[in-house]
Image (tube, rainbow, N blue to C red; front, side, top):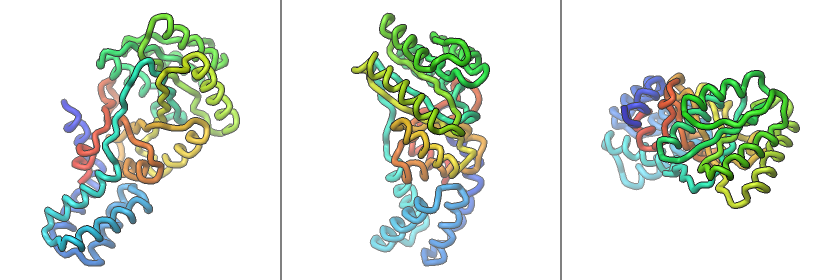
Length: 297
């Protein structure tokens, strides 16, 4: 099954929430104040967010008025264009050697995401090593080892409670000696002690900068799509600790809040690079904006 069909299937719950309502609304062909009020309500119901929704509606109203649009199909296409402009067309480009630090709170699917990312990169012909630097959560490295085995990549781990930066150091040393293309770094997901989290991430960063000063650096945050707008506060916290480059959105198939993708890009200006649409190792997909928009409207 290709990406387009998987993303369509994964967004069924979101489409059920807003797609039918949008279709009925546009079919009326009456684009007055009541139309835009109802459109606002529909978009908010999919967790697109207040600021993003207002911007979408203002832009859509301006363009449709300017072009004197009265055809429902044309109006629908205008809505898609406005949404696509928000999402942009950014994709993750690897220029090895690459160090990817993966952050996110516990429970979002961070460990499984790392295994799935490793699988994606292996299929692209890259060599990968995983650093099990979440030494805080019990059995985190064992869980990561299972996914590393599935993806057929090496894993560097220490005992529970070890210094995460030491794990990263060993992984980078291994990567340099074997000329490995990509190092995937797992990190602790706790937020209750923000200061410790930040210090830990900064220490890991210092190790990477010292050991691999010329490596491509990518910082990804894993978010659970089912949390909707609450995901934005997680981006804020981790962005303070580590400048985020992109987002992996998991569990998109399990929520009617798929519109949060638009809110994240609009409010945070951080692209969604990957989306999870299932539990299998091949169910993490590179994000495609056009397929996503087709999947929700």
